[in-house]
Length: 165
Image (cartoon, rainbow, N blue to C red; front, side):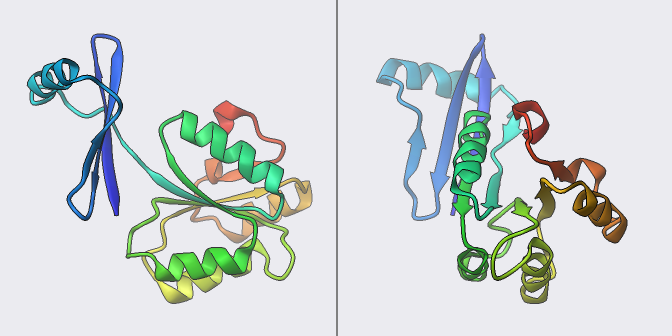
């Protein structure tokens, strides 16, 4: 599992990652810059914990766009165009591997709600869930069917970058 933090110092940012097998990664800085960062990071508070998001949508162009937007905003993103493959990946992943699930509602073979229910049956500690749809009637039905989900987690397509992030 990869964990990481994004830091800010004097207008610059630094990403630090720790990979479970013991390998540490910092974005490409030379040795002097790394030493400077290490001296200042101990007194700095992390700004953002990096979140891992699973995006599931049968339209490849949408998953490409979502991944691009989310990665450019500091998220780690795994995309799936097949809900069955996404479900399998979720089952294979350690508990709490994903922080957020972003699932399209209408997909061939399994709807977004069915995928969500399958994930909940497998793991009761389901991460934060967001549903996306281009159908107004489904958008309203989702909000009524899942009152426990924050309204910001019901996404209308097409979505702009600020709304997605």
